[in-house]
Image (tube, rainbow, N blue to C red; front, side, top):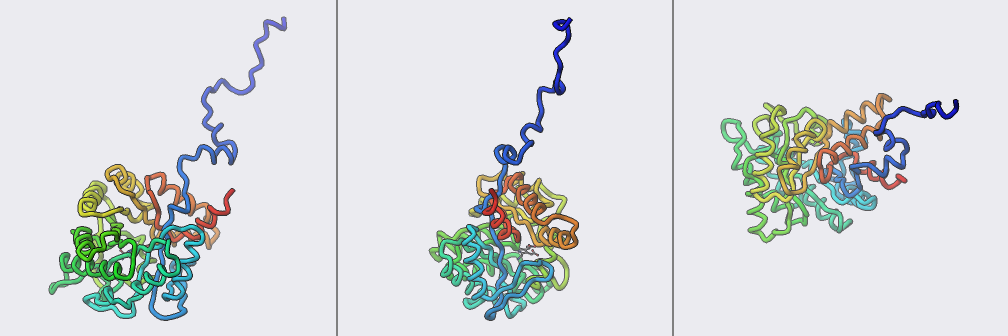
Length: 337
Ligand code: PBG
């Protein structure tokens, strides 16, 4: 009687149970496919002229415009939590049609490069290179007589700007203007002046995006007329991203960037598959502002949302991430156990 009874079955006959690998925090840690390390984070910094300036940018809470003295200290603090690189943006005292202050040897970016290299010699200093913060009209290039962007004249300006930054000891220049041929022109200008070790991180794939809104308020660079759609890429296009990235590789870029990150992770993945260089993701001001604003209203958990955003960049193939969450994320990573 007893022998003829079927054995008691506990659980169902499922052979494969994916949940086994999710049951505890420890096993999730063990099997995680992608991790964000402090080594992957680049922190943007905004530099203005003056002394002892530290103004919070209202559209980017927790991000500041700082004078050279303050920025050197802040960069050192970033280095102390292990952040390998900062990306510098300048807000000059004077803007004009020809963006002359871009090459001013005493400009805020030039001074900040030297001050940061002195304060934190191992921290990599990357300088964003674009005319839009320096032109009175807010366009990324110089205009010709009919008010259109003159590509080739703009490229000459960028090459001079790269030299100006290299003279101050910048490690890497990051052209973000999307003019044609600028990477090659910058490489030639740097090499001709014996700056063969100065690198180029190209914003190779930069879309015309509404997600730059808070940044433009930060540096007061919104175009006074028209928009950036004649040079920045059009959101529906992905194939074109490969063309842009390969061109920049051929022209001598050391690393390429895709920007923004969140709405373009598919593009990031394609670019990563197409090139043999480090690929960066730029999680832009609008991505930061959305999370900050929703968190301030209690609608979203800021830390979890930020971490999810950063790991999605890694999953898509980013080798490193430019993010306004860099410092906070680095501190969280350091505290995690
Ligand atoms: C151009 C530049 C922009 C950003 C980085 N470099 C603005 C633009 O193209 O309008 C945007 C960065 C951000 O939104 O976080 N110098």
